[in-house]
Length: 151
Image 1: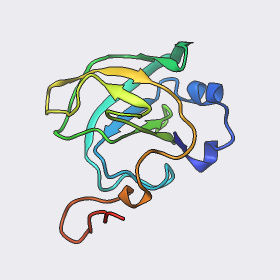
Image 2: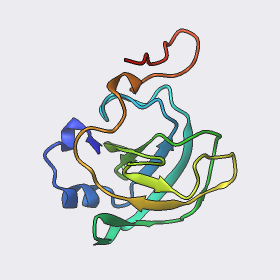
Image 3: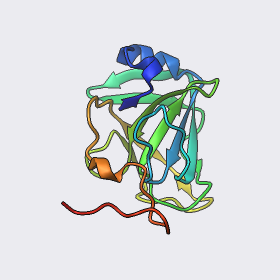
């Protein structure tokens, strides 16, 4: 989890409360370095809206988010790479890693197709660095932007 600086000192319970009525927006893989930076080079794949309360009792290390709808229809084609969580007023709270492997958020699908259902499966709060290399942040395979270089 990469918290916006405004919420850096919040506990997990406070973060859960901030998300009442908020959203989880699923983006493709060109994530910003921090949650304070606007998303500008990633495609919005799907959006989940939290109910109020946003979370039920946790099941071990996995959280129990309450959504207005699950699954939701994808709005674009792509592979989830991160999820931005916002309050009901649109204020960014945090970014979460998403996708297969050791990620905070998992979906039933590996990729999204326009109009196809995207089903949320799992959320676990992990604090600290994300598993990707730092040079992956903000990259996008298009002319004018270099791809990450192996080291």
